[in-house]
Length: 313
Length: 179
Image (cartoon, rainbow over all chains, first blue to last red; front, side, top):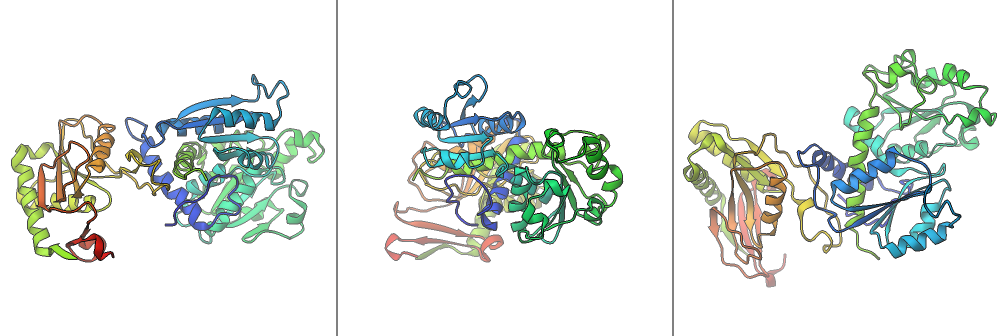
């Protein structure tokens, strides 16, 4: 096992397989901490984790907060609404404030791709990207890898299908950048208008292919990840209608049956039931969606632990 | 380098400690053995097998990873991989025997006791070690000791166990000898 040397978690795009494995291995131990009568260990006692969410989020923020508290860190929340960000404070001003507050780790979500990099260069704190625009959401990619590995075992050669709005999805990108290094073969499916042009035209990353026919994509697959469809995509003219999307791309029980027996269904949440995923599938026996939420806390504990163990440069 | 214990010495020490553990509390049904990773868990498994052979009773066995309870996480400059703790039984009202290979500063044992009480309230916690090499930083002592070894702070005591290292042996390496 390699020694962890990263100062920040901004994207898993440039991570080695060994680094991904290190996070998954630590998360396995963290999951046990969460199952104890006292769900708390003192590893980050005396450390401060600042949760800076400039974009609305409940589950990711709560997940990081639970993770930080399970390791005994102090947690400070800064949200966009009800803070000076709403009064027009620039990101640079916010960074100066974060720096002055003296947090050890800043977990941040921002609508602008690259914002966490901007912050990471200007603060002494370790920065974890909790979602930046359509760029990356590394903790989601890692928790999906953890959840799939727990169900499927080694991902080498496993066929994972990602269905939906890949173009605007930081989850899809982080899933690719985490699952492909672990050996998974990824099939993207979804409307051509919601696929990056280069990928649609055949210029794809290694171990990734595009299959416009979702039924063919799912035939014999080992797992499917349904992406959230933002309702405004239809208003923007990228889709004829939400009903049409549900009919052509929605993950229904009939489509699930095309996969291998017991092949699981994942979704990063929050779900639009009846659009990208049917309620019967979301709450059915194949669904790992609740497991993803539980595993998310363990993955985020592992990331906070690993970063807090790395000294400031 | 000096070999302190060969394979036969290790076997005899474990056999003796297994008897001492039972004699001490005379309440085998209340006993549990919890080894501290890595090596202490292997020793705990051997003690459990020995007690099973002598007493005809199965003693619950656990393995503890103390990484998250270390007091030097902010000082060592890296984050050691955390391994899973496995305690498949309630520690409430049990006599829990912590098992480790080497007792030195006592900081590992302090961390292990902190971890253990997060799982419940044992009736008592005892400590069994294969080697006590002295130089305690904390007021901690072992109840069961395989061998007391006077050492220098600069010495290195290396415990090899067949399950992990292919042989049972304890070595004392003096500082000037290096690796």
